[in-house]
Length: 557
Image 1 (cartoon, rainbow, N blue to C red):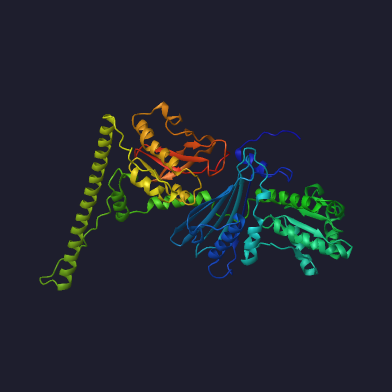
Image 2: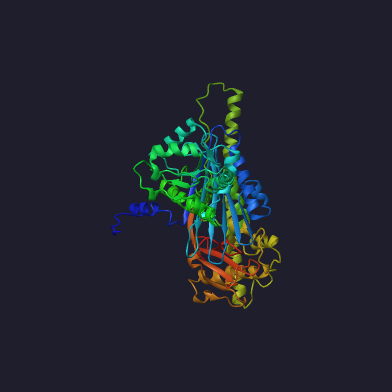
């Protein structure tokens, strides 16, 4: 095979997408849409089916937040899952992410997105990515059973046609004509797996059982057809013998098939090979991989937003929402979420009145007095907001000065801080004791629910070190001793994340979380493995903890 020069990135992507079934891939995306006649509240029904499937997969109960379709984080064994929901006007989007470690060197991430509003169709997106150090094929991790469960209870469409989760048996001439028209359609993007019935009637029941299993395994990737012997003759007449399939054999017709196609492009498995030990399993796996490659090349069908898209949208909406009430709340609860500039609410202009007649009516005078009273009340509230923020900043500055004075005199202002002993009181302790110096993000707070790390006080000492020694070192311009082993905390290290770095959106800004405190480097046991992922917010002058206390499974580590 001659080497050709790749002229552009698009050409490289096209070549990768065009690999044959023996190549495989590290990512698989499949989409579908709910038919318009699905009935009332199809989005909610889809979410319920996904949660039911997730509960069965995890073999345990989900957090209450998950059952209410809210954002959540949950860990069990070697599997971690989380959810996010974005509601903006009529648009309602919900997604879950499942991260599994089937082996120490393997990491598989699967996401299911249910997106749609009252004006448009409900979209369902399934995406599987292999994040392992040495990625393999992801077809075996593809949740075809979930899509089959959805298609069994809700009419789904893919590429404008009904999504099939059961085999289609061609028994009439009319159905055969429709099958041949679809098979030879040059615009067809979905592979057709054609199974034929053997001449011996005793073997036909087994073939029908295998057809149902194959249809469930390739739901969303291919359509399974079953041809009786009489219909195989019709197929042979139309496409010639070397491109046909008959007498119990299986054949996968890829998109673009026609009478002039090469037979090697459309894999054929004979009846004798299927009857060998493990023959059905090997045939199913081969058809699954080939169908997945065809879907990659075609683009995955109907598209829904990804989990990362919804996380970014949720962060954007959270940053956009606010106003006077949220501003007062941040001001009252202080420097943990410091605002550098006063965000004044827009002034309320007094309504313009037409020139009064010599005798203005009582209603007109009352309206004018009400408008003047509202304007005065607004000015008083605005002055109060500014005063509250100034008092808060002055109090924080005085507290920092007093703490510095205590340290100069040889004391430690944090020695009397009682460390928490349970995870339920951990976030409240952080808000009270480390305010203005360290803050937990919403994601980190959610991860504390159900945390399994045994030594809660150790995690608190690590955060106290970040809020004290580490923060002081950063404010003083940096300190090389802040890297490596943490003095006074046995077995804890402050080191870069490396390949586990990730992006975090906060206050409308993108931050790179590339440092973490770690303990238990040689274990993944959540009871003994501690990871605290954080970044330094230069503008706020504080440490922001983005994830804790378990190992974050979002990269190759």
